[in-house]
Image (cartoon, rainbow, N blue to C red; front, top):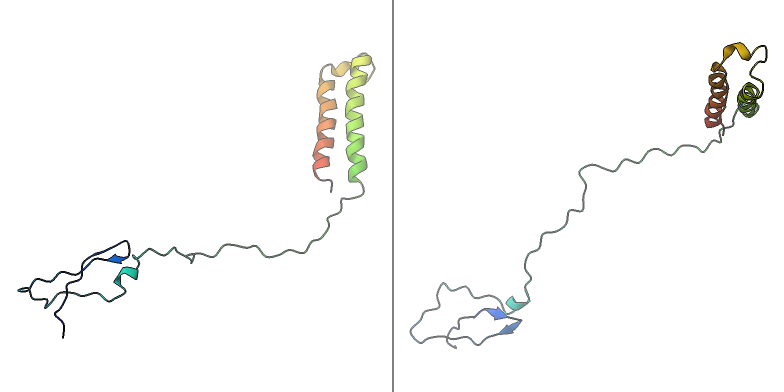
Length: 124
C-alpha cells in the first residue's frame, strides 16, 4: 500500500502534485473524489412558476354590429343644418327668424354640428 497523499487545490482544471511530509498524518483530512475539478459552483435557478396565472379573457363570438338605418342620414342632415344655419346668419343676418337671435345663431349652428359628430361615433 502506498502512503496517503494530500490533495491540493485545483486551478484551471489541472491537478497540482500532492505533497506529503513523512511525519504528517492524513487522518481526518477530506479527500475529494477524482473528478473534483469537474464540479460546478451552485447557481440559483430562475423561477419558472408564477404565483398567479395570467388572466386570459374568454373568447367572444365575433358578431358584426350594424348601425341603425336612421343613423347615417341623421348625422349628415345635422351637419348640413348646422353649416347652413351659420352660413345664413353671416349672409343675411336680418332674416325674420334668425335676426332676433343675434349671436346665439352661432351656438345653434355649432350644436347641430356637434350633434352630428356625436352620432358619427355610434356609426359602425
